[in-house]
Amino acid sequence: MRLTVHRVLFLSHFAAVALVSGSIGTLFYRAAVDSIVESLRARLTTSAALISHTLDGSELDGVDSPAAVGSEVYRRTLARLRELQTTDADIAFIYVMRLDGGKVTFVADSDQSPNQGLPGQEYPEAGPTLLRGFVIACADEAITTDRWGHFLSGYAPLPNGKGRYLLGLDMRADVVERRLATVRVTAGASLLLSLALAWLLAWLVDRRLTTPVVRATAGIRGLAQSRSGQLLPLAGDDELGELTEAFNHLSERLLAIEVLTAGDPPYFQRAQVHACAPILEFRA
Image (cartoon, rainbow, N blue to C red; front, side, top):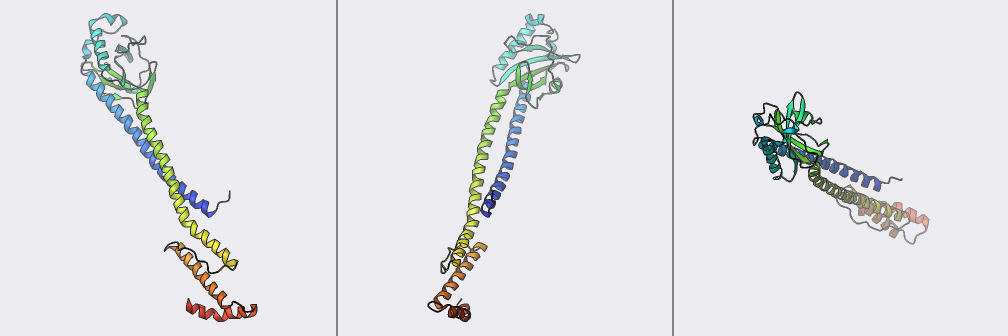
């Protein structure tokens, strides 16, 4: 492809503006995504800490096997978890877990499907963040996956649990994705607008710089064909304006020479051009 000055100016300005706007947009997008994830993590951490204070870990020592599902403590705890789950549509599950000898097991699980975690059932997918939840309120840094699905979870230790019990909250990944989708749509629209503005700015700059040059080029070609006296519109008070003024000055001088030498033989025309040069210079 032949890279003319026109193309170089347009592409260089478009690329520069698009690169700058795209880089800034990417930074804002990443900041917005991080902000949303951090706000959800803070929400889960706070909710888990608040809900955990409605339970007493010292009452749950006997809920350690499937046989305990008929106990009053288990039924009361499960009813409490399911009641709390209905207060927030974004929460998929609320559960209580026990840490015993490095093994994590369920105590109670609000899940009402056949996959409900029963007392004493081991949870082998426990990660570092969940284990930290037996000591301090915290939340996963990213979406995790287990047999129940994809979630962003928060954890908090139970009062009087002596570091053996925690309460967990699972927020479904689609809730997180919906929040992030809004940011993606906004970021995409901003990127398209930035590209449109970059194209417009590049076109205006290209038009401002190349139009006077194109006109001057056409004018010089006209002078070569003895079409003197034509004037170009002024292009401003910058270097391009000076180029236009210089061309107009040259065209007027050539026209004056043609008028003075009109009707004379070629030999005398050449002589009169040399003779009139001081007069033309004085008139100019």
